Length: 546
Image 1 (tube, one colour):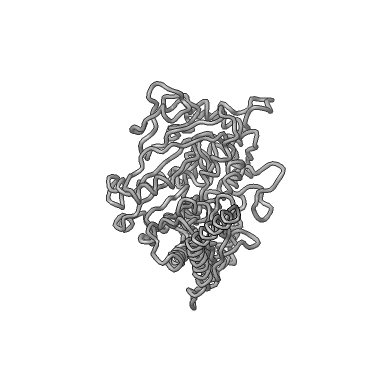
Image 2 (cartoon, rainbow, N blue to C red; image 1 turned 135 degrees about the vertical axis):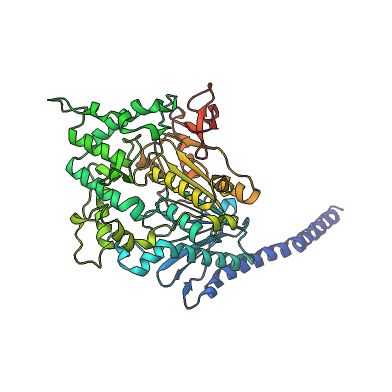
C-alpha cells in the first residue's frame, strides 16, 4: 500500500513537472528569442553606415547599479563628428535626451543616467577631440563650423535614426540640455534647427566667443596682471558684497537677490583701500581699480559698456579664482603655463587668428578689433534671437543662469532675453514657449551660496508631454557652495543627470548647511511672505521685480 501511494505521488509530481515545463519553457524560449532579437538589432545598427557616416556594430551592455541593460552604439559622421547613443532594452518611453557638452567639447558625454526614466541618450564630441590645447581645433575651418552649429544637429539626426531602427518606431519626444558651451549649442539648435527638439534646456549660455568670452577675458587678464587680486582679496570682496548688497531687496537672507542694484556706488570699494602702513584686510588702490573694472564691465571711449561685468557676490567661492586670480599652488587646466582660465584665452585668440601672420596678442584691442574678431569667429556666434520658427514647431525652452556667474555674465542673458522678446513677438508670446530662471548667488553652471541645484528636466517633460507650463521651481543649496567641489561632484558638464547626482552626494551633509530657495521665471522674483524660515522656499512667493 505504501509503495502504491509513493508511486501515485511520484506520478502526480511528474505530471505537475511536465505541466510546469509545458507552460514555462515557451515563455523562456520567448524571452530568449526577444533577447536574441535585441542583440541582433543592436549589432545590425552598423547597417546604417553610408558614404558620410560610419556606424559601429552596437553592443549590449549589462546592467550596473542604476543603469539598466542597454544597447550602446558609436559612430563617426564626416570622419570627425563622433557620436554615442544608448538605449535601454526595457522601459523606453519614446524619449531621447541629448547632452551638449560645455567648454570647447572635444569628448563624448553621459548617455546613460536618464535611461531609468525611460530616455534613450545621445551625445557628440562636437566634431573634434582634444589636442595639445583645447582650442587648437579652430585652426581647421571644418572643425570650427562643426563645433559652431553642425555637429550637434547632424548627431541629433543620426541619433534619432539609430533609435528608430532599434525600437522599430520613431522618437516621440526629443530633449536637449547643456550648460555653458552646451547652453550655447542648445540655443543654436532652437534658432538654426527649430524642428530638432521638443524641449531644450540651456544653462548659462555662452552666446559666443565674441559676445561673451574672448575680448572680455583678455581685458580682465590684462587688468589682473597689472594690479592682481589675490585669494585673500576675494574673501574681502565677498564680505563687502554681502554687507553692502544683501538687503537691497528689502530682506537680509544671505543672498544678493537684487544684484542689478549692487552698483559700484553701493559697494563703496574705496572704503576697502589700505590706509598708509596697512598691509592686511584691505585692498591696494590698484586692486580696487581691478575689482571695479570686473564689476562694471569694459567701456568704450564714450563711456558705454561694451562687455558686461560680473554681478557682485560669492567672490570667495571658487569661480573668481578659476577665471581671474588662478588657483594657488597649481596651474589651472589651461595651456601655455597660464595660471587662470581668462589668461589662457590668449591661446584661443592666437588660434583664431592663425591665418594672419601679423597677429600679436599684445596688440589686440577688445573694442577696436570687434569687427575682425566677429569675422573669424562667425561660426560660433548665435544668429539673431528670433525664436518664431521654434515657437511654430511647438518647441519649449528653459534658460537658467546664475546671477554671479563669472565667465558668462548673467547680464548677457538678460539682454538676450530682451532681444528675443522683441524679435519673437513680445514677452507675452515668449511666455507661451519659454521660461528663464536667474538664480541668486549661483556661479558658473554650479556652486554658490544660493539654491543652485535644481531639477529642470522634470518641469520640461511635464511641459512637453502634459502641457503643464513650469512656473516656480525649487532650488536647493545642498550644503555645497564652493565651485570646484560642486563641479567635481556633478562630474563637470558630463553628467546628463547632474541634479540627482548632487542631491545624492548631499545626503551625508549637515542639514544645517542646506537650504531651499524659490526660483521664479524672469522677470518675476521671489518675495518673502512675511513669515517662515528665511532658508526655506515655502516662505517665498513669486512676484513682480524690485
